[in-house]
Image 1 (cartoon, rainbow, N blue to C red):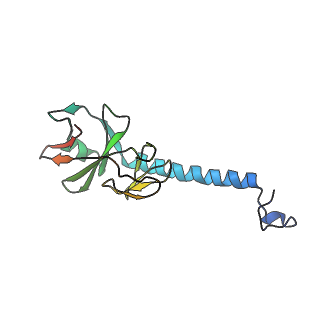
Image 2 (image 1 turned 120 degrees about the horizontal axis):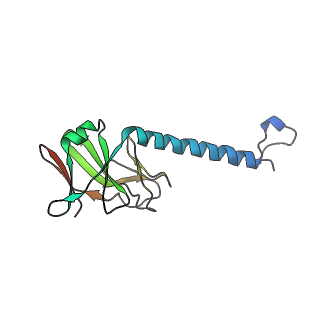
Image 3 (image 1 turned 180 degrees about the vertical axis):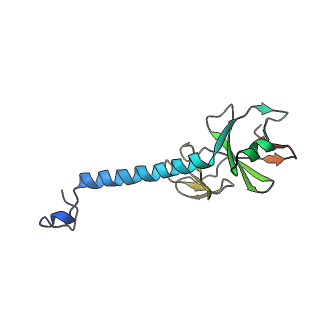
Length: 155
């Protein structure tokens, strides 16, 4: 079982399919671990309830600022997926459900975009699909800001 193009008499230049599969799988695991490390280092998760008329999640601005990151994951009490609350520029926020529309895998925040670790779909920080197997954007929620609060409309 030698890969095409390799001669039997060159043992140090051959690779058995089983070894190739092991090597490829190891590389894939390392790349996936890199995504998880990036996500763990940059994102805080808060649990939020729904308040006010029209179903709004309210995050205090001082709580967001104390996060020390432009991104915060907000656990919605009625969803298995969190909402990413991202400050795109001072005082401007986007809110996207972290569920890939392709096959409902939880996406991962990176400083450049959102990535689906299941099939490689990528999305802008505004939730727009840019590559991969997803054909629809991430679900977005309107976010409004006051002097003391950030409100995500989920109703």
